[in-house]
Amino acid sequence: MNNAGYFLSKIIKKAVQLYHGDYGAAMSNRLSVKYLNPRTNMLLVQTMRSCHLMVMSAMSFIKTIGQHNGFFRTLHVGGTIRSCQKFLIKYHRKEIQQALRQCRSDEETKIVQDTLIAACAKMEKIETEDFSIDDIMGENG
Image (tube, rainbow, N blue to C red):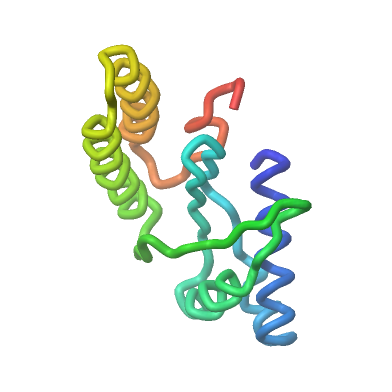
């Protein structure tokens, strides 16, 4: 996991402890960030099934990330990392269609296609449930 993923997992764990006490802290001990894409602002968090509601509720109270204002919004809850990957692929494809409709020139269309299709291709390439942020982001992030 890279530094940003580690930093975000610490923020989430701290929020779970703050809002759910020692029990929440113990339950969120195995929480980890499995996917992080700063370009699309997507984050995939893995935690135990028994504490996913505590994690989601605590994440909704996070208003600052470092020195930046921000918030978390849950798009999907899945039982496996693979199901979350499939959701992200579908989600990105919908975003591609929406972004393409808003393009005003062929140059804008080409930029949108190259950027978003590359992100989907990287996600589809991963075939196992265990993957790292580096696998998705590439060496340059």
